[in-house]
Structure formats: structure tokens, C-alpha cells
Length: 468
Image 1 (cartoon, rainbow, N blue to C red):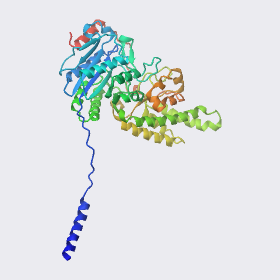
Image 2 (cartoon, rainbow, N blue to C red):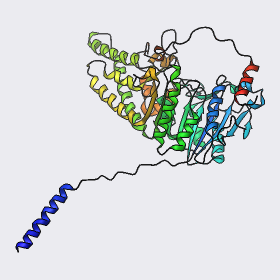
Image 3 (tube, rainbow, N blue to C red):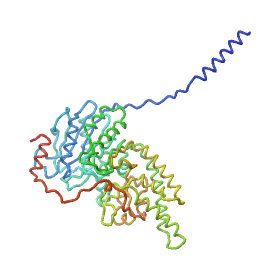
Image 4 (spheres, rainbow, N blue to C red):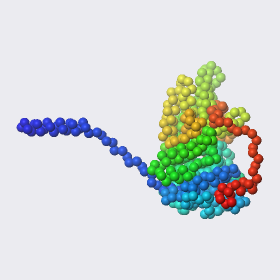
């Protein structure tokens, strides 16, 4: 009996000791490993003054060359004045081959007046690329000038790829989305290698077409993207977000010597909806307060409310960062593109008022949602102290009325989901004197350089591509 009791005691102690030493080991989900094949498609044109830059970027892809994992196709067009030269004529389709070529031999040459701004032209190119180079995932590069969001009577706003062979008509956001949808393609990434396309209005408009968006909120320098680097990181990728974030860092590093304030960002469109939901709350609140301000009568009963709201709106609207430095004579911005996060943080810092607690809450909510959707935003040195997120349109109610923002803005998917235009049409404060890129560097002044004779321009381009 004693032996049985001793044995039981030993087993009990052993059990207690083993329990105290056992550690909970969480079962973590397996990390998603990217082993996809990719086809990159570039769709663009010289746009009157970017032909040499277009050649540069294509040559970067040619140096890298195609691999079993990454293919590269293109449909590009040189500017109208160069169409007289056979090697530069027409709308050229090509496929990148073995590494190291100086230039491509076109697979197909279509007419020079092919309307790049029409959705069916984009659809046809996407389908052609998929037939020529099928892959697991597809990336579309939209190359040329970018116009961000701007009102336009003909709805060619929110445009890119302005083709001077067709009266500088650009591929508008609506036409681009239609062209992609008609190709039955969901892109892994749409990459705007163009100026001013990092606007939340643009990104929200293409969310159903792509998992990721890469774009810049400032102007993009002539160097543009580094397509050798892009192909390299896709070839080496085990994690798409990490590889594209590395690409952004390398590309922005090339832009540092310009001394200009520049950026390149990567957005996860699959995580954009929570941010749009938070912007909807912000939009509703500032719209409500602006309507209260506009309805205030000029008597003592409303003086405190009106002065409080006036100070709050003025601090936020005129204090948030401006992404472009062109202005009208009255000091108002030609391109009304401002930083979303700075705007809401300034609302939260407008003094202790009855509205402050709500603004603090909204700022935190938007900050969290932005951090989740914005994988990276690389900035050049002049902006190292800035905390920038998404560009967004801010105008006052008179500009909304006088410059034709309605109904064009109200057609945006962004407005339909957030009601941001409801705020713009009642905002009482004109953005004037905002911090902007012009404060970081000297904009060169002086006469325009003498134009180069067309024969010399053509000779220069032919030398670039090894045809002379």
C-alpha cells in the first residue's frame, strides 16, 4: 500500500512539473510565397517631349531581358514630329527578348493615329500581350504625362498617356477602367509612371481592376522608373509587397540628385475600402460643420460658432501640404492636390473646441486605415521630415461652382463611396499659401532655350536606339 501511495505521489509530481514546463507554441499560418510568373505591359507615348525618356525606360527593360518568370511587352508611339522617320513611325508593339539588346524590332506596327485614349485600343493591347506572353499575374505600366484629377467637360480628366498624334487626348480614368474590364483582366499591379497620379480619387477609381497601385503624388522626373530594377525584383521575389517596396526605394534613390521633392508609393487596393469608409465619416462631419458655418447669421448668437469653425477650417485647409506648385494670380492652386492625413491632423489641432474630440478620433481612424493600405511611400531628402500619405482634392465652394467640378467630380467612384464632393461644394475656405514643393527648391527662371532643329532631334533619337 505504501509503495502504491509513493508511486502515485511521484506520478502526480511529475505531472505537475511537466505541466509547468510546457509552453504554448502558437501555430502560425504559413507565409505566402510568391512564385508567380509575370508579364509586364507598358502602354504609352512620347507625348511631344518625353521621347528620350521613353527610350531610356524601354532600354532598361531590354538590358534586363526576359526570363522564364518575367516577360515584358509594349505598345508605344513616338511624338508626332518624329513620325516622318521610319524607325520611329507608327504605334509599335514589341516583346523583350534576350538580355542586352539596345533596341527592339517591332513585332507589329499599327497606324500612328491609333487612338490610345479609347478603351478598345487598351483592351486590344492587353489581350495581345496575354496571348503572346501568358503568365500567372499581369502588371500594366501607364507611361507618359499624368493629369491626376482635374475637371473637364469632355470627361478626359483623371488622364494619362496624352498623345500629341491625336490632339493630346489622354486616356481618362473611365476609359481606362472600361478597357481593362473589357479584357477580363485583374492586374496584380497598375503602375502609373507619370506625374501626379497618387491621388486617392485615382486609386479608388481603379481598385476593382488591380490588387496594387504604384504611383507618385508629385511630379515624376525624366528618369522615370527603373525597369531593370523592376524586372530584377520580380525575378527574385518571394513576397510581392516586399519586392515592390524595395523597387520603390531603389527608384527614388536614383531621383535624389535632382534635389527635388519627389515620391513613389505602393498601395494595397484590397485594403483600401476601410480607408474609404473612414473618409466617408470625415466627409460627412466636415460637410455638416461647413453647412452650419454657411448658415450662421451675422449676430451675436452665432459669432462664437462662426469664429470657431472659421479658425478650424482655415488652419486645416490652408495648412495642409500641397503637391504641386502652380498657382493662379490670386494665390490659389491650379492643381488642388493636398495631403489627406495632414488635413485631418490639422483639423484635430485647431484648438480645444466642441469639435476637437471628434476630429482627433477621425484623425486616428484615418491614420490606421492609411497605414494598412499604404505599403510604402518613399520620399526624397527634401521631404524627409514630412509625414505624407494620399493626395486628395481640396477646393472651396466658389471654385467648385466656377470651375465646373460638378458633375465631373460626382462621377468619380471615390465621391460615390465617400461623398467628398459634398464637402468641397460647401467648404468656405480657399486653399491659399499652403506648404508645397516650391518651398524646397529653386524653380529655375529665365527664357526658354532655343528649339533644336527637327533633323537634330531625330538624329539624336536614332543614335539612342542604335539606328544611326
